[in-house]
Image 1: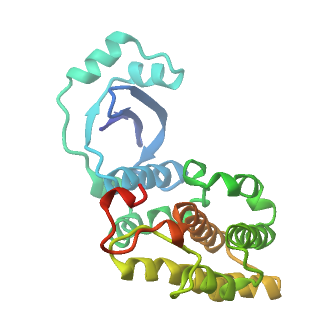
Image 2 (image 1 turned 135 degrees about the horizontal axis):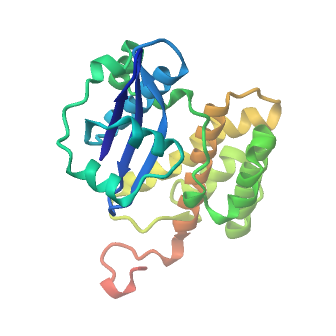
Length: 255
């Protein structure tokens, strides 16, 4: 939840935010936001409130005394201040007064995060891509090329195949002579996973292998996440000979 702490002065209204997390921690975003005039304070306030609204955060507002707002400036709110804020009757925030039409439109279109620099989610990166991901922004095109080459080396090492690109992935995952597969009951799911490898090779790996590409940061990160997904799928793949044929005993199936 988020409680807007508002304090009016002669010409404007100053705002701070008291955030409460799912585990009960309270975080003060001290005063610096504003409303009632043009400038960076109101623009930042509008964007932050739009983000909170977009993510479904419960927002209310209460007025506080100038002395309390002054203490918030110095990160010096007391336990008594927090108790007073907690016990104050919250009112519905005047979002229409605080959030600009542009940010309301961004809420509706889902584009609020578009202006935020893309961030690599290292927690989901395959360990074999981690070293390339750490230095990704130093040369996205080079790191993606190396990532595809490394994936091909892994597949060649597991299958004994010697070709490359979409041909390698096709021979490795497609058809009756496939070397690797996934223990899935639905054959169409297996085909779909195999198609991801060949499609990514034709759409992304091949252009990067043959020329230098100038890629927007968002597009580069999206491709890195696609490549990362291929690494994770490859890690789940098993040799075809270990997958039981229909009718085999249940105990013969791989975990």
